[in-house]
Image 1: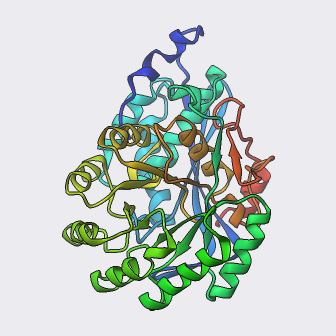
Image 2: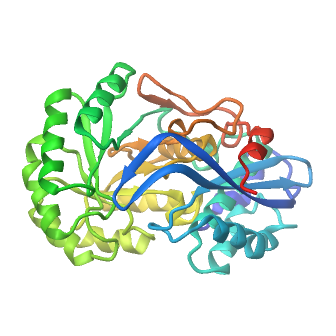
Length: 387
């Protein structure tokens, strides 16, 4: 979470009074919602999504919401840990303070504790949502204004069998999808390369394909995959090696015919710069939970653009429409979204908002209401709350 100086003068610039938007209460709410079907990733099978909601209530009665998914293999965050971080440290830090001074609050949260990006992210998003609702502007407008009003949605393929991936791809193409991510790093590298080739043959050249290994490969298998899947014309291969194998990523990038995308490695802007300068990556998967908030992600997007990196924005599997709306606004203000946007609420059996985010004809529309633009149903929150 990094300062954005515009927040300190937002009320004056938008013609509203300068009275403080005092934070009265902060609630950390753990929830669990089953997925429509399991998603297989390297090292993990996800059947239920565990997320933290942060509810920030102002003295004037307005409420803002933020969300962060657990990601023990990416950020180290667990649900009890995120709840404890908010309740024990972050909530007392911001309660009684002015939500319109959100840059200052983000700075305080950043330095209050090391790591804990998920907790900081959910709080920062909730404060931004609250400020937007108070000022009657969307998150897009709060962060500089939209460059686009719709985004191409990416769909994840993670079935155990290639036949099921192909069948699902055909089904989703009929629904308007034209961008798919293959989950790899799970099986034999030869078989996964062959599967990528089969999917490409099945869908033709008009559909965009990429692959995500979630750190599931060693250097040998990653090289086998990129060489043998060359003709699959993958847009990128995401995070094939472990998050701290910077030398391996740089070496692989030098020989790979497929551009590499960083994800788990990219814990902060300094590492993004380091890996870009080393030639390790041509793009960056940016998640608010890794970077610690909406403000920090906006900053990281600007850095990526300056470095000439392609930007890929994603929710973790799987976040509700609260997280989906936030990522959508970020995608609309991003300098580029050349490597796609992935919202994940549609992988859940249910949602916690009154009108969930929808993907229509393969596109995600920017919410136009104040703040995030989605209205949370607190009865639904109570239904899925982890006791």
